[in-house]
Every structure is written in C-alpha cells, then in structure tokens.
Image (cartoon, rainbow, N blue to C red; front, side, top):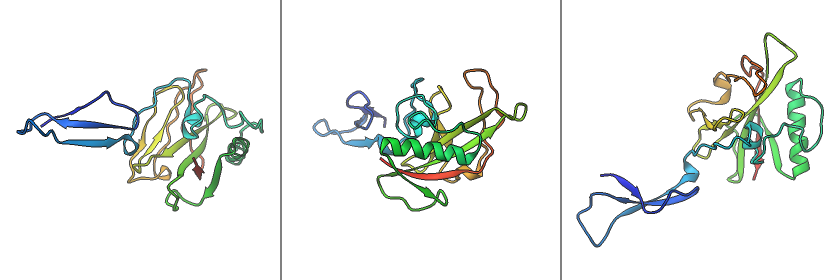
Length: 184
C-alpha cells in the first residue's frame, strides 16, 4: 500500500489516502503534522543564528543590540541575550540540554570556534532541539539539516566548521556548550 497526499504538501499538515483499499465508498486517510517532522529550510537569506531564533534573517549575535565583538563564549552569550532582550523574546539559561522545558520553549545550544591557523578568526554556531527530539542546524546559507539524533546531546558530538562566504576555514566549534530555553 502507498500513501498519496490528498492535496499539495503544506508546511504544517496534510492528509494522505491509501492506494489499495477494497471499499470504493470509504477511503481511509491519516493526517500528518509536520510539527513532528523535520522540514529543511533552504533559504539562503537565513543563517544559523536567524534560524535558531526564528528571525528569518542572516544576522550576527549583536545585530539588534550593537554589543561587543565576539571573542569569547561569554561575549557570545552576552550578545545573544542583549538581542533577545531588545526583541522582547523570553529566555532562560539551562544547566543541561535535558532540563525540563514548557511546551512554548525551544532549547538552543551555542558554541564558539577558533581557527587553529589564524587564532584571531572566531565563529559561532547554533543548533536547535526540534520538537521530535532531534537537534537541527543551518550552516550559513546552506539548507538546514539534522545535526544529531535524539540519542545524543550537542555535548557528545563534534561540531564541524565549514568554509564561510569569505573563504575562512574553521576547524570545529570546540568551546563548551551553552544551552538556553527560548520562549516563542
């Protein structure tokens, strides 16, 4: 038996019908909510920061609050929270990715990375815990993708770095991980 959509796939839900069913008067269907699935974000106008915080922008953690240059993980966190305060987005610091959250909170992990060949080059990255328990990220202008399964936390996997738009090559995001719960 195959399932076919009854209408074009939409962002949040759709219905499917079964291909082989003996009754011509009743066609069983199931409804799928994409909120439990991962649908890749392919927009080039959104980076990891914009994706994680639902900003729909390609921005850095200081865009809204004009904070300090990011050279440490603490400065990254400070810039992020200043932006969230400016935007009126609620958040709280978590001690681990397994802390309890409410249904309107999303867990976001952040790290800082340093290029081993040029230590002055620093970059940041954000990953989001999806509603299905998996961690998702959006590397720069590339499509968002699964980062790691729900069997792991971001602390347990290597955060690989990519070449950015200016050709800077980073090794990996190797700082400690900061977790925050953001209220949307």
